[in-house]
Length: 366
Ligand SMILES: *Cc1c(COP(=O)(O)O)cnc(C)c1O
Image (cartoon, rainbow, N blue to C red; front, side):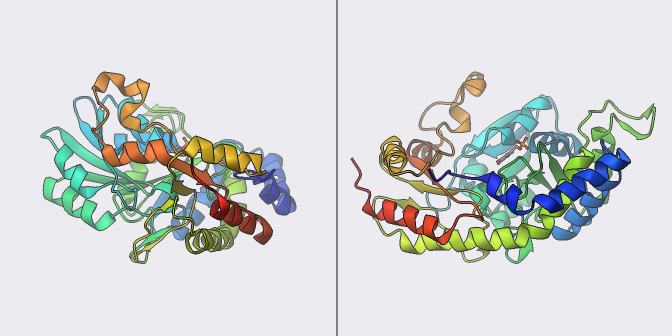
């Protein structure tokens, strides 16, 4: 069985490096924050071409902290895409503010600036764009809207480590970038991890205080804070991974491009990748008339696929009280009911890539 993602191949391939990194942390007992978490912050800021980064305990916390650093709270509205992993909206809700869901475009499947524009009210304070599936969203149009309406613009980069928009890395394209290092993300921890990146050192400074129980100096608490620190072991593991990220990304892009050019079966609708972007193929999503039937066909042929995401955020039960209806985000709803995710991870062999392409081309819908 070919898995949708097989992380164990990567862990095995780099076993000694990971082991040495973890040993060093344990010997120094630098378990929470500390030297190895700090070092990773510097390396990751350099990688993202930004002034500073703050390592945190997961991507959801990164989004929550970015909202807090913008001063978002009760009574505020923040526009987020309907087509994303739900955590994009959690950070907004944690502050007491309300997420307002915008549709995605019909071709890129990323947040639609035209839809964002229609969601703006006097209460709107910020927009969170998501580089979903590793494909940068239309940052330049969103910047224009944010500028016109004096809104904060935040990037959710949880699926897009190393992706670029007009030659610049994600994480440095807006006021702040929020990353996740959940196992299976393009850069991953041995557990949970996340980061906020920014060119605004003061914003990162505020985040450093908030994530560390509200203090800069131990036992002197300036504000009500959180325990959202990065663990030392995760920092050390992430430093190892960061050294390999570009080679992993090259392989993801090779696989993504092969799927795009060699899967010619017209039952599949593919995501558009605009010329001014450098996608990193976190997930290879297709639209197909009967996704459950397609998954069953692939499974019967020894290939595991899954779906991202079967229910759009605005129709999730958790947000039922917001009163959204079917038809409010038609492109996101169509995507949710037709999406299927093909296997894609750096250690896939050429033979496995060929197997997926062959099965897709032989697939007959219905
Ligand atoms: C994974 C993910 C998150 C949440 O990150 P965690 O580290 O799991 O908390 C947020 N947004 C998107 C788009 C994600 O894919």
